[in-house]
Image 1 (tube, rainbow, N blue to C red):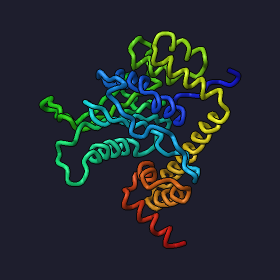
Image 2 (cartoon, helix red, strand yellow):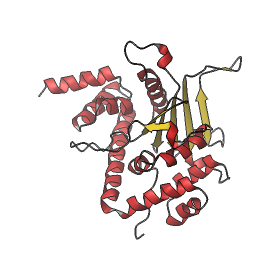
Image 3 (cartoon, helix red, strand yellow):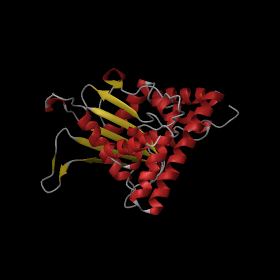
Length: 276
């Protein structure tokens, strides 16, 4: 391989590896959630990456999964830390929980909603743990609220290099050379399959171009959000949203990345359409 392998923390590569290969995804979910999950137990809701004709390179970059026993699970890579990220995680997980029930259905349809965030930076300076699991919990009486929401955060920089499966997956996400990938692939069949996909993507010039385009779109989006943060004004956030809509991003994507409600984004889109 002449060029270095593509990184699994690239959104496009992550979606191609884990969104399209159920044995690999099931192995990751088993490691993170301590659950017995096989490829027969899961169904990827947004199975493929498909940029639309407007050049939208940020569509469906997370991997959303329905499971038979454990609810709805969303897995995503996060490589930038910015203001209100915690609120976005909480909002998006709550949305997943609520969106399970359609109009007219009863509450029995609701199952647990789980978000798994794999971060390429450290969230918590207070400890060395690389996996934090958050659930609704009565701290005074040590009672967990059943079947609601869960947010799991994995921090790649804190990987300990031990033999636990989670640690080894974090080593996989941190890998940047062919030698590093091959060493992990020798010991874990799922990582061998994942490495095979990355190797194929890395050798294909068109696939490399897609991965680079997604990365550029992500950097541009983060730059806009950081610009709004520096200004510290709600007007700036509205302006960022308007620019994202003009670039062809969906209401869902704009809402997710700006923390504006869907109604607020629809209002901005309506003003833009009326102004044409």
